[in-house]
Length: 280
Image (cartoon, rainbow, N blue to C red):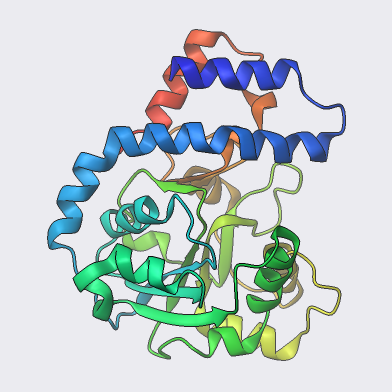
């Protein structure tokens, strides 16, 4: 963790004056360091759990991963969500290009996962973002799930579940980590909770014509239709991104927002990050 702090401090001291460019750089530069640490620290626990883990093919809740690349964090994320809630079904929306990779990761467990080939090829970074936003704001996407599912939890490749999920995590019509710059909205980000019937209702009624970021678009629609989402204090402590929390269930790219940490004493930051990146 000391080494990760040093890289973060160096990046912060040499930061680009253009804020949006710098956030993207922090995100990309620091992610490999963080996941190397997570894999080193937690693979023994997660691998042991994975040995006997088999997800239900059908359940009232499901984890959802939409990823068309053979991403280096994929194996860790699969084992991490399994540990976080083994009672959930798992849906993997992939491409023809990374399907063999996913099959290799799952091995004999493959029949227990819902694998849906959705994309052709790996695509560029820009095209991948556009396709993702288009997919998750379309009714056809949500209609592919078992209609008996009540809530889905979307999971991206830069997340970490540090605590097992309780039943009250699966609540509301839609919500995610609160955004520091707009805390009154339901939020979004790398982990979101979505009521399946409400997503079908919204995406059938509205159209994302200008291809906004899907989480911002759905968050706005939830406000527009007076949908349900938990209060700020619950969301802030449940999923952490740009607002620091004491004991969140899961994290998303908190290392992107270094302004929150680099003005604090080094020892305090190292201690806090170490605690955040532990399995509780």
